[in-house]
Image (cartoon, rainbow over all chains, first blue to last red; front, side):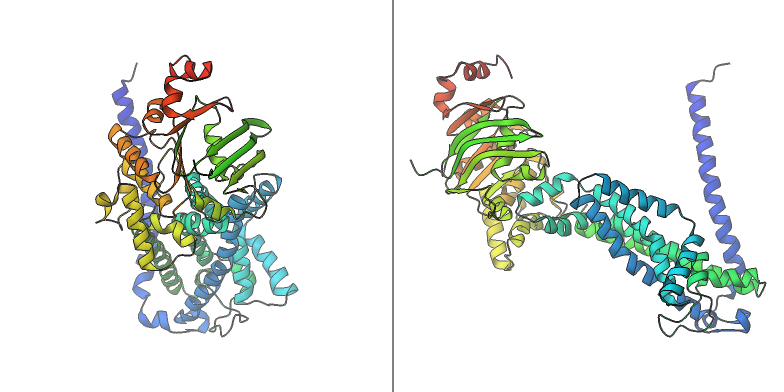
Length: 279
Length: 252
C-alpha cells in the first residue's frame, strides 16, 4: 500500500511535534515537582539565615554567598583567558599544527568528567599549592573546567563575524588590535556572552568538583581561603545524608530559580545590546 | 601636467608564487579619474589592493618592484600601513556597512586616526556625505543603523566613509557592480565632482562606465598592462589589437 505524500507529511509533522512535546513535558515535570516540594519552604528567613543542626533547621545564606563567590570567581578567571585564547586562535595565528593542538586540547578537556577536575584541583590547588579546601581552590578548579566551553563558544562567535568587516576596518586605517576590539569583539559579544552565561550556570550547578576543592563548611566564608559550601553541594548533602528532604527541595528550588533568572536576564540584556548596537 | 601622485615601477604581485600582476609601470596623477578595465583575472583588483597594501593580509602574497606615493615607496619597512590606508582609501565591490549607525560608520576612521573633537567629527561627516551626494538623504537619520539604507545608499555611505579621511587617492573596485542604473549614475556624478580634491582609480567590468566616468583608461589582460591612454582615444583609436578586440567584445 502506498502512503500519499500528504499523509506521510502529516505523520512526520505529528511525530516530530510529539517528540518536541515530550522534551518540553519532561522539563516542566521536573521543574514542577521540585518547585512544588521546595517553594513553600523558601521564606525570607530561609534565604537570609545560617543553617543550624547540619542544615536541618535554619537557612542557606552561607551557601548562597558561597555559590556566588565560587561560581563568580571561576567565570571571572576563565572568561578573560578563554576569550583571549579564542582571539589568538582566530585572529592572530594561521591555521596550523599549533591551533589544531590547542583546539584538540580544549575539546579533550571539555570531555573530562567533573570529578576528575575535582581530583586534580584537590591535589594541585588544595594540596600542592597549599590553598586548602577553599573558595579559591574551588573557583580555580571550576575555571579550568569551564575554560573549553568559553574558548569554543567564543571562537564560534568570532568566526561568525564576516571577514569583510575586518577588511573594511583595515582599509580605514586600523591596526589588527583596533580591529579586534572595535569590530570583531563588538560584533561577537552576544555569542561570547552566551558561552559565559552557560559556563556560569555550569559552575553554579557543579557538585562533585567543588566538594573536593571548596569543601563543605557550613559557616559563612570570611575570605577566599575559607572553605565554603555551594547550593548544589548543600542540596546533595541534605538529600544524601537524609538530613532534611524539605530543606533539600527548598535549596534546589532556589538553585533552579537562580539559574532560570540568570538565563532570562542575560537573554534580555543581549536583546537590548543587539537593539542598541544595531543588528 | 602635474607631478604624478602615484608612480608604479616594475611592480609584480604574486599569490603563492603565481604572478597576478606582471612588471607593471603606471602613473596616477592628481585630479584625474583613471579607469582600469579588463576581463576576469586580469589583475585589476590585485593591483588596486596593492595600492593600499590590503594584499598584505593574504599570507601567500609576495611582490617586487616599487609603488611610490609622493615619491616614497609604500612597501618600505618604515611606512605606517594604517596611515597609508587612510591616504589611499578603498571602496569595495559589495557595500559593507559595519553593523552600527550611519554616523558611527563615518567617524570610525577618524576616531582611529585619533580625532575625538565632536565639532570636527560632525563637520567632516557632513562634508563627506555632501561629496558622496548622500547628505540630503540621511541628514535626519544619522543615528539609525546603516543597514536600513538601500544598496545604492550603502555604497555611497562607504564612499563617504573613505572621503571623511580626506584621502589623496580614492580607489574603487567595481563599486557599481550590484547597483541599479540610477544609483550608478549618482556615484558617477559624485566622482566627477570628487576629482577636484583627489585622484580616483576606478576598476570596472563595465566598459561603458569606463568610457563615461574616466579621463584616462588602462586595459589589463592576464596581469599585463596592455595599453593606457586618454579615455576618448583608447576607446576610439586603440593602438593595440588586443584592446580593440576586448572593446568590440571578441573575448572577455
